[in-house]
Amino acid sequence: MKVVGFAGYSGSGKTTLVERLIPALRLRGLRVSVVKHAHHAFDIDHPGKDTYRHREAGAFEVVVASERRLALIREFEQPARLSVHHLVAELWEGVDWVLVEGFKESNLLKVEVWRASAGKPARYMDDDFIVAIATDEPANLPEATLRPVLDLNDPDAVAQWLTDNGERFDYRPEIYA
Image (cartoon, rainbow, N blue to C red):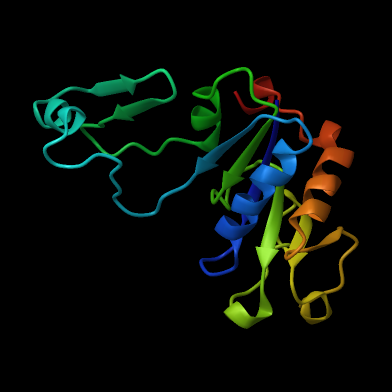
């Protein structure tokens, strides 16, 4: 499996890029999974649903499955800081690419998503794990770079760059152990 991160500040376009990359990679015959970092409390369950009731009753994990879908809900008694590597390990082995959104401090190879108009600093100058920059304003990058600069608004070109450089993103869990 190949794993690449997409890092950038809120409002930079990470979610939109990842959302548009999924079909671009699927058209190439690839199976894609996503790991998403959430900063705040979130829920995929709703009051009154069976799974919610099981969690409220104290279940540590609830797995709900149908012929088309599986969801695992794990409830931590104490706050847990899982690394991106813990989450990648939870994924099914049959995936070709894992797109990781967020986890900007991780030691994964990442594409920085940056927009000058967002008013946030770029990170590529200080993060050796950033291997490319996806932007809609290459002329406004704060510093020249030898890293590839990708068009944020051309997901097919980003997907092509990823697949052309796929060996670079081969995931080796033993490196992160």
